[in-house]
Length: 184
Figure (tube, rainbow, N blue to C red):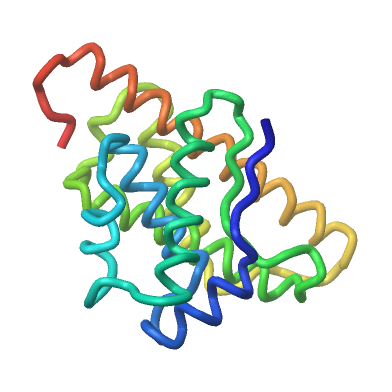
């Protein structure tokens, strides 16, 4: 079953009217990071951690759609997770920048849920978190050969997709094995 995220530009435009310093990619990354740590997190609680006041109107509807679709993708086990990023028609520089913001948001989402020491995580997760940090910290990418650059971007998006799904599964397995202990 394929799930569809709201349109990036629509979410981004509505979000910028409420929170000018936050873009849709970073917001989605934060939501997904939070959901990976706490799949039972309520929508209102998550948005309360991200927004200065409860969302209203168009942004409330868009965030609800983003939340429910993201949660379904992460919980579905169908590996159809997609990060909210500009579409392929956007300039590559804009897509690369949004990818960095998404990775940064994901790491912030983990932090918001108390998962600050990622070195203690199981398996490949510490390395994945480090990779996501590198994606988030990159100030620019060499954009010399359009076809190569496009392929490199697509590979990074695919890496991010798989990384988030691995995070979710590993944390889920860790939580199931720990019983009532916390992973924070």
